Length: 143
Image 1 (cartoon, one colour):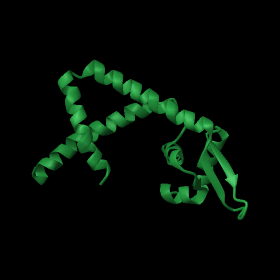
Image 2: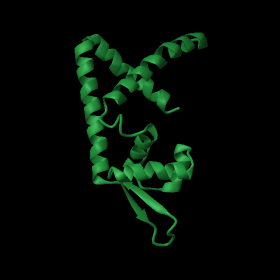
Image 3: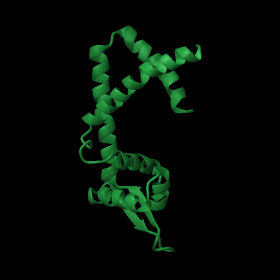
């Protein structure tokens, strides 16, 4: 495919993907409660614990701003904070059981909505095309 055709495809694909992601976020029960950064921190914590300073670097925000994010998540009982025994300045952050449950609930609701939307609006041929597109879209994410 020529670079011009790739550009045209990108210009058509980007707004559709943006609208789809926004729609799925809007349907989330956490939409009005958590900021994008707070949701991002929850996803990061899903696989491992982090120091609060590491989270600030990953999210590209100041340690003070990360402190506010973590305080809000803690107030909602979505994370656990553990002060290091060797250095009281270090705080280890992990998902609480409620945080894990919340992430799973949001994903389930999004999958349920998307599955229903696909079943109701897409033909069998459309569904095959979507299945085939997953591979190509995955390559874009992995760049």
